[in-house]
Length: 217
Figure (spheres, rainbow, N blue to C red):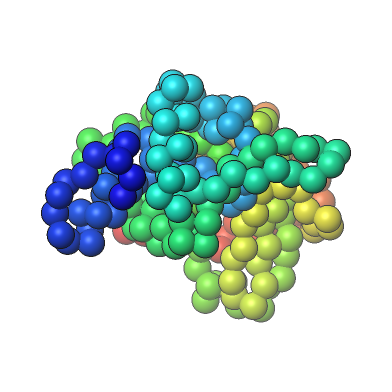
């Protein structure tokens, strides 16, 4: 525990975990780094309600605690990015559980815009490996501010930030529409007709892909 961080002074390891990631914005920073590194400016885009000073402070605390590290990308990018350490990445099941738990809240506001990383985490949460069976498909999901590659193979789902080297189908949409289609709240065709979704590639594979996500009761 660093001197700059507050502590509950409780010997339980859950209290220590909250010492490390319990401050406002900390877990959302972790969420937005789950699928790959980000520059500070990208984190700001994904967390627009967080002030630059607060996000900088949280990143500094997470780095001091060993949850996050900084790394310089090789040329020609040569940009400084933040990424999760191996220990930090172990928070993924915690975030998945929080997302499921929060979905049951009677006070949850359904009209608040959804972020890119939150939408991809929702896909991870709702993926049904039994339905996937032996389906093998790579989908490139293109949002206005980010692109993700989503691969299904051997009954498993892998999501990473960045474009795919090769993909079977690409989808250009927004996070809310992606979640709505994946969870069966509207069809692909309806989203396309509404101008909320564009498809480049194999429609049949995309329909099979969208059927892999089951909304929990």
